Length: 309
Ligand code: MEV
Image 1 (cartoon, rainbow, N blue to C red):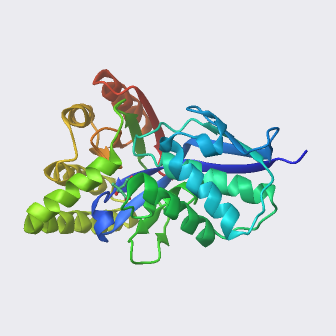
Image 2: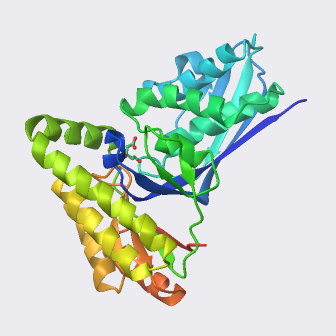
């Protein structure tokens, strides 16, 4: 019998998280070391079922933490006027949850793709992103749309909410180390924290955001000039400003400090913050291995590294 398949990967924000919510630029890249695969087939029950790490059972009775997935499913069925027979949706993901890697958007992307594959629907990237963003609003309220874009596409982008994303080539003689702090990141909380700070101290937040926007623009130039030292410095500045926005914490700062001391060209938190992942820029593979080790010694529970090419 027929099976529909859908895939998505994680994402890493190199620079510009949070400011991107307020229409400043961010640079992000696909991160395919961790992935989600979804299969859709005919249900053996009289209702549609979903099966994932947290829940297996009827979709209609799924816990509220899966509300965004539920939304993505019903939006897909509605958009394409599919009179659905009961389906079985099986999710296999090794993207760490709540680590700023875009896991919730990635799962929605893979589900929408799998449903479309199952029903032989040719969905455009634009339609896919529209559906996933609508579903993501449930998980994150104000989302820049960056997670949806990055988990569904294969190219690094420089992104502004109000503009068409610009894919670009990120080919550097350098390595990026990604380390998981083991603490659940809290994107929704962090985004609302920044929003509250903005209400209280609009001038300060504006200044911080526009500085971050400037760093991102300079980082983009540094990448085209292949100046990895400069890119590293800008990442570190970016972290300092994220810290001023109040979305780092002692655990992240400790791991980031270890990376700096371990020879990183730069290091910062990535994604929503208040937990989640940190990234570090390394000049070569040996340095990447060394930095990953010192970050783990400082408390990170897992790490990856890859060449920026
Ligand atoms: C989360 O990965 C990135 C944030 O900028 C939120 C968003 O862009 O929606 C914090």
